[in-house]
Length: 187
Image (cartoon, rainbow, N blue to C red; front, side, top):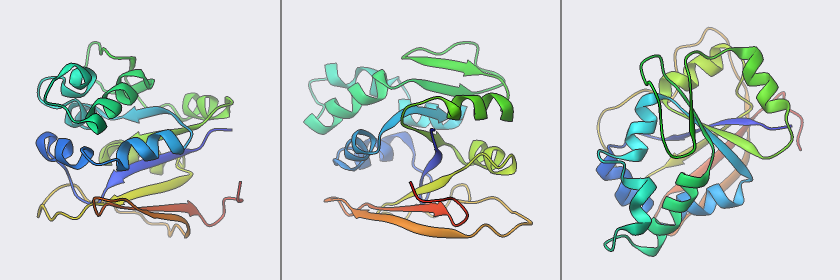
């Protein structure tokens, strides 16, 4: 069974900042090592990751790209993505557009064999949380203060207990905090 995990940075990253952060191995290392088989971004998250000019899908062809950027480009381009958007007509780079979050469809997707699905975007994560579709939280803390952005978690009436499952520090100072829901059995 697949798990859904919002992959969130503590703070909002603009495309240019996201490129600088991804020059480290943290993103590529984790996507490779986490058995991640798909990404479910919201439209804003898709655009931030793609950058202003579809940077990531073709970064491996850019002579100015570092080896880490080249590696991440291939991972991003090849990984299946389902973008949730009411306005996007179509998307390239192994991306399917879905208009609404239908809990039954998401549960059917997670019931299929394979690795985990990474969920990107604060608004989309809030929707998945409202429908009780989130199994764990992967929060990357970056050594940068931006001073604004979306809240990491939405307002909620219910208390959600979490259990720290993993921490990992990367060479660039990024720290991954992976939490599982306390009522989720260990796998």
